[in-house]
Image 1 (tube, rainbow, N blue to C red):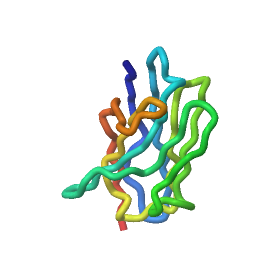
Image 2 (tube, one colour; image 1 turned 135 degrees about the horizontal axis):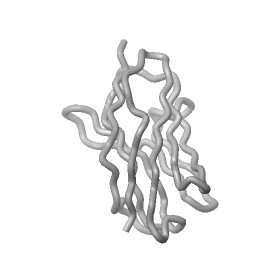
Image 3 (tube, rainbow, N blue to C red; image 1 turned 45 degrees about the vertical axis):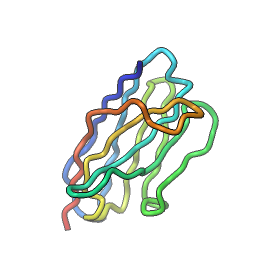
Amino acid sequence: QVQLVESGGGLVQAGGSLRLSCAASGRTISSYVMGWFRQAPGKEREFVASIPWTVGRTYYADFVKGRFTIYRDNAKNTVFLQMNSLKPEDTAVYYCAARQLGANEYKYWGQGTQVTVSS
């Protein structure tokens, strides 16, 4: 079992920055890949970025490359999403999720945190 708790959302002007945090707990968290997803009103949930707890590469959706950075603090079991140069179209509920290495689906999800970017 993995528990995920997000924080760090809020209201920011276009061009601003926010950092989201995802605190993870569970016995075998090191064997998981952590991901960030987002869902805007009236739209489907979409992948934003992912990172494994152990050695491995990060992945980003094309629409955030160069603006968002995903990274982790293994000592704190926390994954971060640094979001820079925010745009109004980045407005969404952002979710942290976890999947086991080798699995296709993300099994565990946080409750989500709202990010609103004003123009």
